[in-house]
Image (cartoon, rainbow, N blue to C red):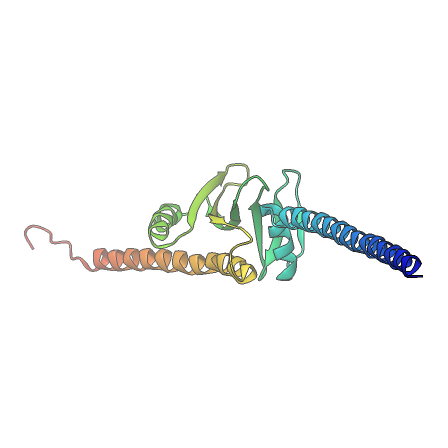
Length: 207
């Protein structure tokens, strides 16, 4: 009996060791499979986030978030309106910078007497604004047009990127005011000069 009992006890212990060993192996294997699954999900999420955060993709998403409906023209540039003004942005996923354009926002007839004054106002404005303003000539319509642009960093790491984009767009309206003020100042100087010339007496010899 003692020998038989000992054999039975050994058999039970061996079975228990085998059973719990298998259970432990199954648990560890399940953990490994779960870990591999989590790693795969993390890799997928990382790839998706990286794609979403590329410059152009990030810009399009940000435009939607600030309520701007955009279109893409034949040159793959992004066109949209903000506060009634039409903007164009050149953006690529291969660059961390975007170029924002405010095209033909003002202009004059080429035969206007204010053309030279406008060119001088552009130079003064460029000295006082972070934007660059330039002009182009449309000989067919006999017009000179004003265009402004700025090159800005646009990456996902920028905090409050929606506010950041809005601030850059609103800087164009600030520049419009600077340009108008410079033009008005030149006009005022010209008016004063003309008045002084008109008031100058012509002294005729002998009188």
